[in-house]
Length: 168
Image 1: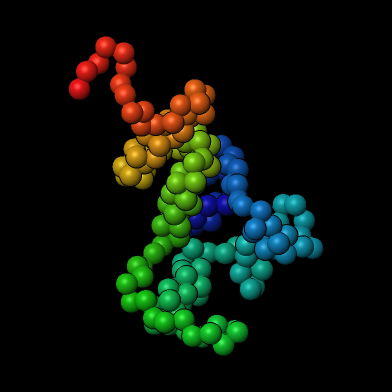
Image 2: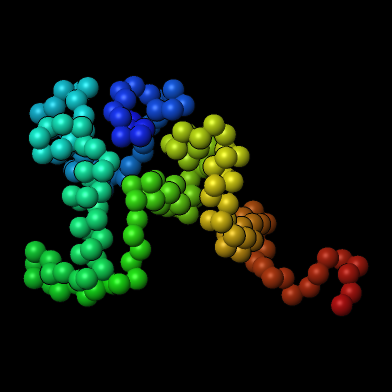
């Protein structure tokens, strides 16, 4: 189900292809709880009235109050006081999509897999949208190449000398 312009549309999203949404195993208990006593075609996330979870309602009832709690501080159910964080940004459900993609890329996920997860037409589109995530990765690429070279040759780097014939 999608909600373009506030209208519920059942079926595949705008690309007209089904998407798989991977999630880490640590979320399995929550997903299993959501799926309990539901038919395979039932909605996984729904309103308290058992209706589709509307974007505007989710933002107003869940997301915005959660952001407000973070910004103003709160007390946990265990009694711990969490200090306010007024710098925490206002976010949207679409920002959460970007966060999921960013975390996947930062964790080393294959860009083609992230492309499929997001429903992008091409990996190029994914790379264009998330290119800023790779700016700091150049050092990691260098380190990974160095580690791979050391593992395959047994030579640790930097070597105290250069290639034969190279003088300093």
